[in-house]
Length: 146
Length: 386
Image (cartoon, rainbow over all chains, first blue to last red; front, side, top):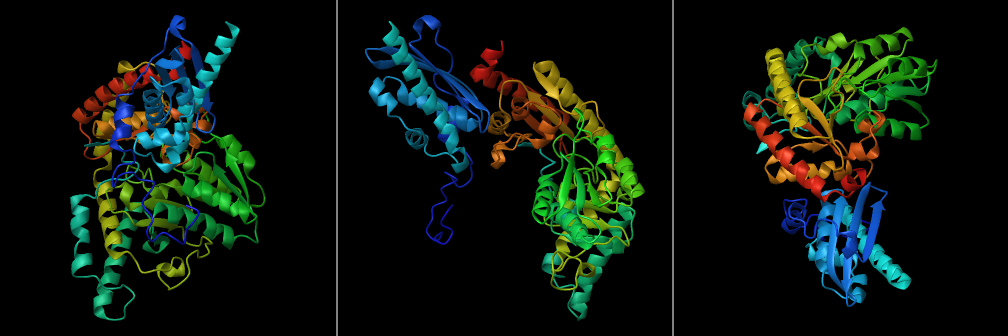
């Protein structure tokens, strides 16, 4: 966007496909989100709640941790298709990962796994990443207490 | 596909299209050219102007053709502001105007004008008292839309125009969403300037008009040739204007019967949705509305997600909020009506049109029921609320 002068060989980065605003992978994660729901309190080792004040989106994320690995993850999301799809993909990426690896998941990882999202929806993907980090922090606090 | 977004745009009617074709293929001359081939194009533009004026209830010379409703709004606001700058620098508008008016007002604020944004009631009707109280000795223009694009709520334009005129202030209305939808002649609104556009009434995109009452001071905004009485330079969109005239004629032919039909379908939709889904409100339901528009707010879910959920099932509706158009703020219209940001975010606009049939409404109600239930199952705020 910044460089107006050089648009001769620029890829149309905003649109992942020639027609659709959201690509098929994003639509699939929106229509059939993975890991939707809540973990019961007894099974929850970490919980994260984050909101995006810029657009009102909100996400809750629960993790169950076994041997420093994310054994189960569940989420609920209030937001646009971008928020729902990136939340879903984030949980798919996080499930089964070690805490260390899960902590390193970035918004770019989520977007790449989805095959791209519209430029103005990039901020949505941060919601899931921040919720996961909040849940991991919560897990650490709970562990320190017990 | 079930298309229920006629407030965004409408398909070109076959009769309109057929009227336009010769002006691409045989009679493609420039109306300003001095030979007979050009004269033919001029005659077509002037005949179209006459037909639109007849439908509107004004003189042909009181119409300025533009390229869009947005351009007409810009011409009205900037044209009056410039023409009357020495008289005053205050403009009054409403909080629920289209961005074509609101962003133009913002731009005029940047040029030193002062703008008052009059609030609306919870029904989405401009508050007449507030507007009366906002008029000042240096007010040069009041601009209030006729029907709101998101809610369909019809504003008391006649009353507001009379109010402005009593103070010697000019009145503009953006009638893009009401033209062809209400049986009333636009001239009877009493406004000095009226915006209306072809593609909202089954005409082509790229043709619109600004009615300018004879004697209204208006500076040119687009300079160049002498087209459109020197007010709006640029070669006329001949085919578009011809199509516009055909569309206006068609709209007036069936405004009564079509209005009744659409109102019945809209009521069917609203009855269907409110009985199939809990936690839904109809915005502006108690106000006078154009018959084709319904603004529905669903608790605990996001409007853009509803739109995509319906889109996947082949149904086109729009959001009330503007997140999808790149603006993170929920709809200024719904916020002005007192909806919380979250309720505004959960709003869709359904706008019916000529091709809409009962079965489309019933299919949409079923799809909405399923989509809303699915999104609420995902919703993080739903659990918190209960």
